[in-house]
Amino acid sequence: MATVLDIALMGVVLVGNTFLAAVMTRFFRIQLDTRWGAIVYTAFLVPVVLVVTTIGAFSLGVGVDLGSAAAALALMVGLPMGLGVTIDVLYVPAPDEYDLPDTAR
Image (tube, rainbow, N blue to C red; front, side):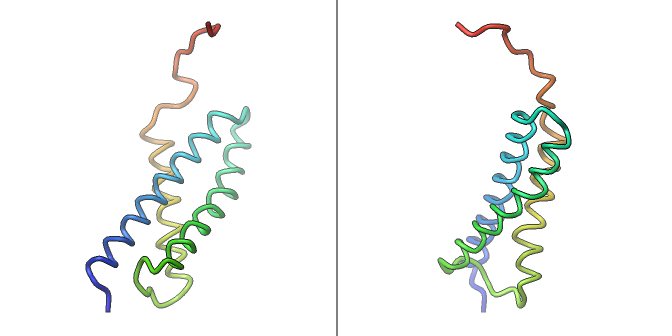
């Protein structure tokens, strides 16, 4: 049976994975020159990192039994990736919109 603490800790991992997905998406959008490069890196590297963090958290005993690996992947990787990418793309200004100085002192 799931306790309130287990559900709360699972929520913390969910929020952490969402934050990680948003930050990684932003990093790829800033550092890579092409739009396709950012899309490819986001599509293939972010899920790998989220799976690793999810496995690490679940191996520490965080979370509840979701019944199947597919449900765990959907909830702990798919949902945070979708939310993180959406937050970065829709709610954070594009990297091209920032005015940066021409030279650094």
